[in-house]
Amino acid sequence: MIDFNCFTLDNGLRVVVHEDPSSAIAAVNIMYDVGSRDEAPTKTGFAHLFEHLMFGGSQNIPVYDRPLQQVGGENNAYTTPDITNYYCTLPAANLETAFWLESDRMLGLSFAPKVLAVQQKVVIEEFKEGYLNQPYGDVWLKLCDLAYTQHPYRWPTIGKEIGHIEAATMEDVKAFFYQFYVPNNAVLVVAGGVRYDDVKRLSERWFGPIPTGPAYQRALPQEPPQTSPRSLHVTADVPHNALYKAYHVPGRLSPDYHTVELMTELLGGSKSSRLYEALVNKKQFFNSIEAYTTTSNDPGLCILSGTLNEGVSFEVAEEAMQTIIAEIEREAMPPQELDKLKNQAEAHRTFEAVGLCHRAEILAEATLLGDTNLVNREAEEIGKVTAAAIRQAAQRMLQGDNCSTIYYHRKG
Image (cartoon, rainbow, N blue to C red; front, side, top):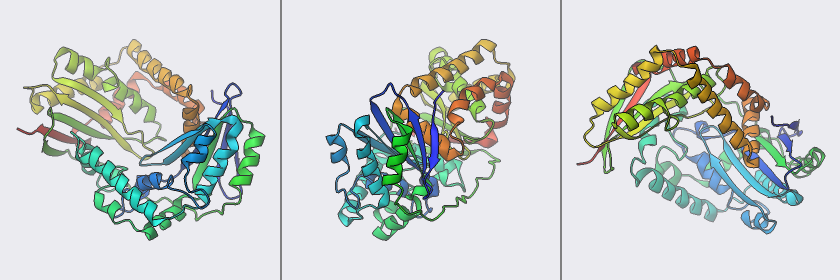
């Protein structure tokens, strides 16, 4: 159970306070309701570019990191298709430093041409190193584009292509900032050795004067149901042939969300999963295999992926994978296996909740989803999942017509 209290400033900034008197540390998390799904198809990668730009100096603070480090703090950030998140930890006694820093860059970036040029180069290099110049690095670029035809999940957070980042202008950057980096499009979570009254006072002092921005009405193109299999063959200089299968599954607020999460864990979430036990340990068709979901707000993907052992054909590997899927669709799951899945899920939640930063993060996510208390109802929702529901989800979703497959061939 994570205790919290909430309030909203006049400018629309939602604030969540989680008091933990046992901690001498404070975590300050600002989550903006913007991710790569909010980008224009011709200007992708902007949400991720902004993750970098926000550390390039603001109106009154030329270097963000230095004042934070001087009071014993540290920080980081990340971007997903759904959100952009900035977080820092520091001694609770120095909490106001975080408010000063975060409010100033919400108020306005420096918009220095040199900063934009530097961060463009950094992101372009990241694109090359992470997606183009390492084995299997381009899989996500290709798989997103294959699985989606309309929804902006069809490009990854890094962007669709390097040219979009190279072509970004200062006008583009300012327009993106003033549309999305506004108090009414953000959630501030303050957790740790803090008090509600102090957080409210600091929020009103540092964030209260920031003007409300334009209301963002998200109206994304919806992905139509996939009605036939899709496939793509890729050949590259990689160590092993690899197989990637993507199935469309519901988003975070669907009543089937936790059922799909447990179904995916059953398939390939660990080394004791069905796919790993059968196809890595016993038959040795794969040298590695896994299953995971994209855990996205809008309908996402369940991914099955694995690298094949030498001499194993794609046909044999794919047929063996399909045999495991058919077993899950056809046979009742033993009660002890379902209990194990639920226990693993609960253990994972409990372990993550130990970290103060993670508690702040999930409180922010739940608030953006519309109900902060989702963080406390998750265990109950997982507990409600039945073996029959998992079997029915597999029958509906793990079908060939709902699948996009990449056959990644080793060159030579």
